[in-house]
Image (cartoon, rainbow, N blue to C red; front, side, top):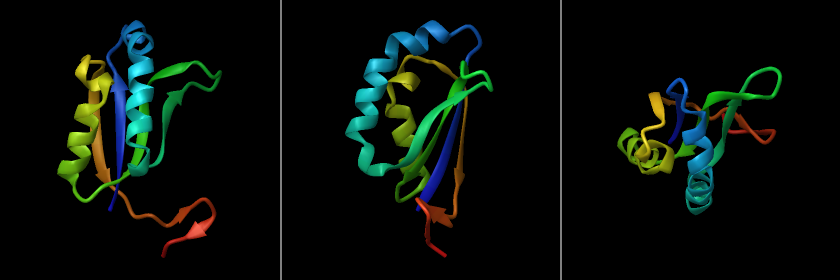
Length: 98
């Protein structure tokens, strides 16, 4: 069942994000089978807004919690806040799931 995980970085932690980005990208690649979509949040000018959004297909809220806790960004204490919300998949890549 899909979940949305939204993260907000701690203020002034852009250097932490940049320093641990390679490990974060490796983590995402290892877990790509669980990712329906994910990416960094951006400001309108394209600059980093300090956070991210993951849409994951896991069996439970606990699995979503374990996944985000295992992300190197979590392990380096980058996030000020994380929310996890169950999501109903209606359309993905132009395909209807209703």
